[in-house]
Image (cartoon, rainbow, N blue to C red; front, top):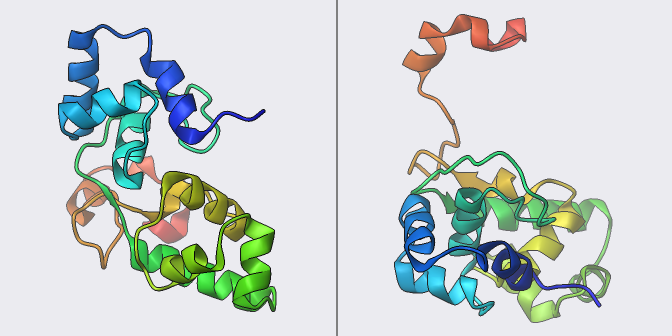
Length: 169
């Protein structure tokens, strides 16, 4: 039996004390009661799930430990997620119901996702797998949902050695 996304996150958070859990919630930028819900294995929103996974140092899709990279304040850009889903579905020449069956979610959930509306964590992970890109690809780190640049241009110009591809300079 596979463990749900909420269960994987809860497994990693179980060993934390209340103070440590509060610190993880604060680092993730989510309310402490949401962190407590996640620790108890209860459902939390997709954005809160992604933030807590990042702060706890686990991969959101697999539950495997990764380097801790707390990024408070980012959010899922649902319209980009929906666009990716729509184009993937059209490229595979699937209607909505066929795609929903293939992904393992309801047609209504797939329709909501395509329209850029939030979906549950489990659905987010399944649809991201169907699209074929990591779920982190749909995150906005800058607060500007029209631009997904991780570092400002000034930083990039000050650190040209950071980029190895000549085309990025």
